[in-house]
Image 1 (tube, rainbow, N blue to C red):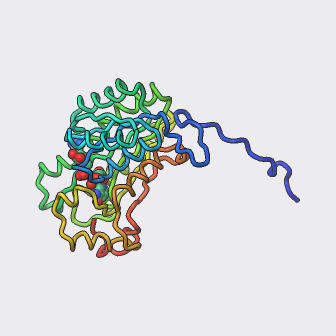
Image 2 (spheres, rainbow, N blue to C red):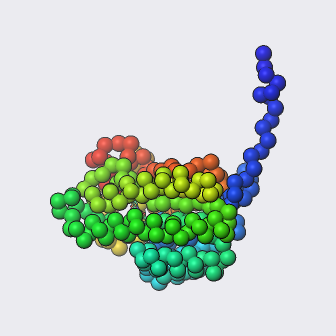
Image 3 (cartoon, helix red, strand yellow):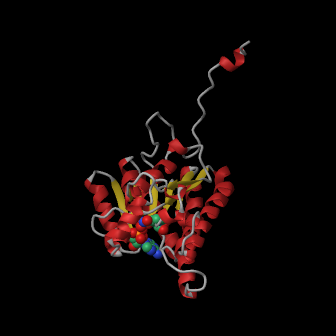
Length: 287
Ligand code: NAD
């Protein structure tokens, strides 16, 4: 016997604070304001942050592109403007508390609100606990973890005050899930996952979603300006069970999805974007 109650269509859920209305193909990003840290890249290269900034702008968001290198940030802004999007550059070192406050103030001053944050800055580093220099350990933890804490602690109150909620993505790495000789980096990126989960719990009641993207080997300008050998590049491609190379756009799309209204019921999660590299043995997972 069927229950007539269960046959009744459910009412559409109301939009969450700060999320806007969700259409079938609507990312709900038009008119939103986003900050992307490390949103620059050299020349016309596509880094993870630049890709996210461009894709957010294509969906109608206004973007503050933050980078420690002025030219890198301004180039991203120029690329967005060339497509008819709206963005502004801001130069900051995200390990500085005052600079993190200033970058959030700049987004509010320029665009009047803050809805979205892509905490994308991160630096690498090789070595075990024995051969990592103390100053390198501290620098990696500072740039990769402290920066996300410092920007978020100013951005979250701004989101609540100006948008009634928001969404944040913190960029981790598969090195957090399967370490292999980058111990300070792996530790910092593990902290980013824990930070994400804690922030999601703390600020869910404020209407703020917080998720993590964990990239695998991605061919960004950091790789080719670092003189990666063709063999090294090929090994990274083969780390994917798909046999394809990851590029900045792959991360940008994941970030944009998690910041969009289509992810309105997703928080505290880590989305691995690695072509399946972590599914197979460590020998097949450089990155
Ligand atoms: P990248 O090294 O090209 O850096 C992006 C930008 O960040 C650069 O323009 C740089 O100037 C800026 N930046 C660096 N330190 C900064 C600071 N202190 N303040 C402000 N800006 C600063 O980055 P990418 O390769 O595109 O990676 C971006 C993120 O993705 C990082 O968190 C990285 O750890 C993560 N990731 C990358 C890969 C990969 O294979 N590329 C893999 C896993 C995770």
